Image (cartoon, rainbow, N blue to C red; front, side, top):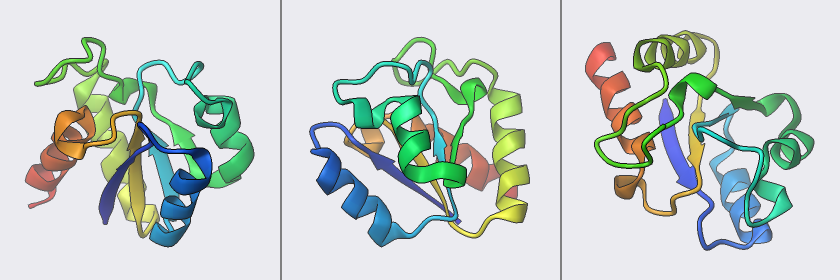
Amino acid sequence: MLKTVGYGNKKPTEFFAELKEMNPDLVIDMRDYPFKAWSGAYTKAGLEKRLGGKYLWLSVCGNVTRELPPTLRDEESCLKEIRKLMDVHGLIVLLCAEKGEQLCHRSYIRKKVKEVLG
């Protein structure tokens, strides 16, 4: 199962409470460049520290244009990796900075995965 979450305009306490309520088996970071964020809690290092083994950055899923429709770094590899991870994990949450799912490339990725899986 795939869900999505964005941390935009959210305090870290609010964001992590929302994530905890979702109770994911894995959080996949979809950002093209997760090394800087307005709060250190949202950087790759901050998320690894907070989420441990439940965090994974998939660089191939990054939106290199930051526009919609997105241009993913490697769309085929992105979708393939997510499908493989779905075979192993129950609930996977796709994470990005954009607060609104429909304004973010994670909605595109979620739709593409659903199309492939039927």
